[in-house]
Length: 362
Image (cartoon, rainbow, N blue to C red; front, top):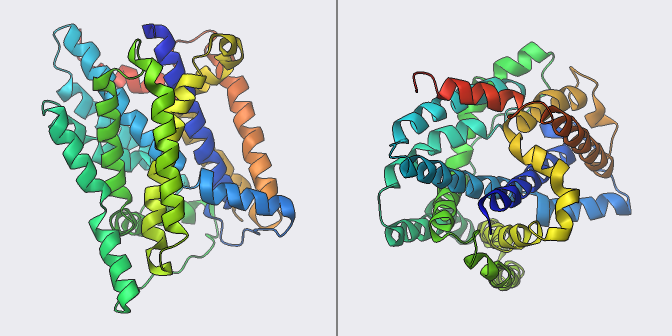
């Protein structure tokens, strides 16, 4: 696979991950308290898709692609004799600031998490691949969620107190709460749910994929085989999920999501690189090149659509209707970024991020 073609296929995979994240957030109305789940057959289908396709999978795909992009940046810089690690750390600081702004609008922002966890790839950059793979497997074991599942099964689990969720009265109240108490909630959730472990593990898996050159020829021919292995892994996790006691469902669900992206990423990367598909994928590539701008604008605008301090559509739409709204919003973004990249090299926020990253560089 030639270099430009390979990057385009990864851009398309990244755009797909963004769509899954958008649909997952849209179905639950971006966390609006009184969102109506609906009860029709269409809502049932959307709920099934939410449980088995949208929920968690887009986030894990994004994490994988973050690790892959880290490798690409380091590899490109080292080919020029440049050590990019220090500059990458500064880039993470800037990403954290983007996340602070976005988190003020949407409390489940992932940019701040990526910015903090993103220092881990810098630490393991010079470590041999087999040790990174070992660390990845150990992180996927999920010690904290596993311990919780065992305690639930034994009946010794004590549910920790939760912050009551209430609708903010105004945008200012939402921004204040999102930037204070919900940050504490987010930190606890990342640890207790094991999401932080999975994020770092996906970083590692993406870096390993980059080192193996699996998205380049001649090794790209093995992508369908990897997808088949991922499908077999998914079948096993589904069988286990339906057979284990209820206490272990959440733990096994995490593994099922990992298995899903192990199937989806190589399958999509192979499919998106088919020559006959390229003319149709150009608009999708534009979103993949502007994911930072797309993700931030989704949180800023759609929370205003669903919460009571905005239009309040979370109370008068069903899950199926919100999925359609999310899809329509995504198509609008595809049109906008296709137009934008007709006269710009980078997305709006991507351009700012790049310029600030390169401050002081020749």
